[in-house]
Structures are given as C-alpha cells and as structure tokens.
Length: 361
Image 1 (tube, helix red, strand yellow):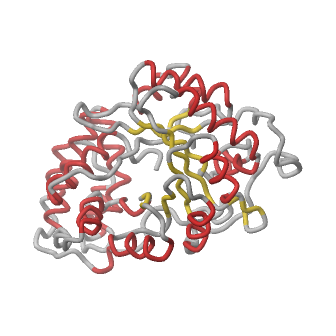
Image 2 (cartoon, helix red, strand yellow):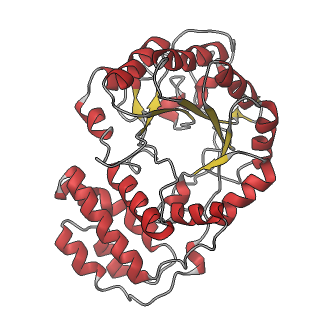
C-alpha cells in the first residue's frame, strides 16, 4: 500500500469509521518506510511518517533487511516517540526488492529473519511499543516459509503475525489460499494470527475468520476507492447491520474530502497529482462517462476537482459491479532473487543494497 496509506488516507478512513460506526476500532498503518532511510533522517521518509494530531495509536510500517539497522530504527522510533506500534513488512513481491533479497524473499533466510525481528523487539524492550510481523506464504509453491516465519517471529517476541495468503510468485494474482492461514493459526498458538488476502467487503472478512480461525484481518487492496470499508468491518464485527453503501453523490463528497486532505499533506499541486490514481478506484462500477473520467484523471486543482465532481449523477446508488477485486492484480511470475539465494536458508549474510530505497517498494 505504498503511496496510498499516507496520513491523508488514514485520516479519511478514521473519519468515516467514526461517523458511520460511532467508534474507531481499526488500526491504521502508515505506508512502508525503509529502516535505513529512517535512521538517516531522509526528508522524504520523515514526511511519510507524518501522523495526524489525534491519530492514536500511531502505527509505523517498517521495511528492513539488516538487524543492526533495524535495531537503530526501532530504537529511534521509541526514543523520539515517532510511533506507538511497529509493523514489520516482509511481504513485498516487487522484483526490484526481491532480486536484492528484500521483502517477500527474506523470510527464506530464517536465521537472518529471526535476527531482524529480534532486533526490533530488543530495541523496544521496556516500552509499550508492540512489534508485529507480516509475511507471505513463501517465495513460490516449492518454497513455503510461513510456518517457520510465524514460529520464529513469535519466539523472537513479536506481538502478532499476519499472513498474506499468496506466494511472492503469485504477486496479487489468483485467489488467496485461506487454508494456509488456518495452518498458520494451528502452528502458532502463542500470539494472535491475522489473515490477509481477498477481503473486499465485510462478508469476506467474516468468511475468512470463520474458515481459518484467525484472530483478525488485515486489509490492503480492499480499501482502494472504498475508505468506508473499515466502518463496515466495525459494524460487522460488532454484530450490527452495516450502513447502506454510499450513493455516487456521497462518494463524490468523500473524494472531495480526500482531495482536501491530500492538498493539506502534500500541497495542492502534488496532492492533486496523487489524487488522480484514486479516481478510477472510487468510480469503479459507477456510470461516469469517458470524458468526465478522463478530465478527473488529469485534475490539477481543488477547485477543478469540485467542478468535475458536481457533474456526477448524485443519485446513482452504489453498484453491484463495484464489489470485488480492486487495484493491481497482474500475473504470476518467477520471483527475481539474488544469485544463490536458495542455497542456504541459514545464511545470515545481509542482502547487499536491498535497503537503498525510501519507500521499501
């Protein structure tokens, strides 16, 4: 969710949950930042760690490949009061990340993985900052790592583990294998196990929990263009009937608010450029017309955004076609890995150059 779950989007999701469900029960995690860039106080990275004044708990998502850098970053977070929770992400399948041994490739190196998780836990010892860990099933169907990763993370002191029920080779394609979440839940019994993959509405979340026995769910692509999903989840978990999905007019109002929040965070010019990628997600399944969609995809100012949104038919109900997968899906592919990466899972050599990026991929 790099480039999506910035402070503007998180604020919008929290506002909608509070307004529709009357409470904020979800944990909203910031976009992934690189431990090395954080320690070096890279300006872009520091801006990515912005939290709203009333945001609590503040959850910071960390990408890392080096135990020493991990310790330094986690200690910095604790010492400088940057966040209340650290979520370590080992799920990124992007080739530029895995070909250097980072992201979803790293849990295969089980000893190094354990050292990294242990470093974050050690750095936050004596604080109230929990460390959680997210990973995939493995590199591909021949190299599953999730059971080892879950056990190792729990043994190293992680407060919870989360499984995206796809391999790195699947990327975001196909169907998430919820059975692997159930297996992880059976295998890891000392900390909560969270499930992730193919949750696009509240019924999906309830179905996953019933099928796997997992303790909670993690939402990724399901909230793209649907920031009110968390309000629906809050209602569903409370056993109440979720509110009627928004009309196109109500979605337009949400888009306006999103644009305002992005402009406040980035400035109007960059905020509107960032808003463009959300347009197709918001309008997915709605009748809008090619010309209006094209104009919205090129929006430059808040005033222009308002004018264009006024042209939408405000009374159109939420369409059935707007449910289901959103965001990138792509096709399965061979995972790019460093030469000899699969030779020794106990090798503790830190991947070279895998942390030279600001967003972690």
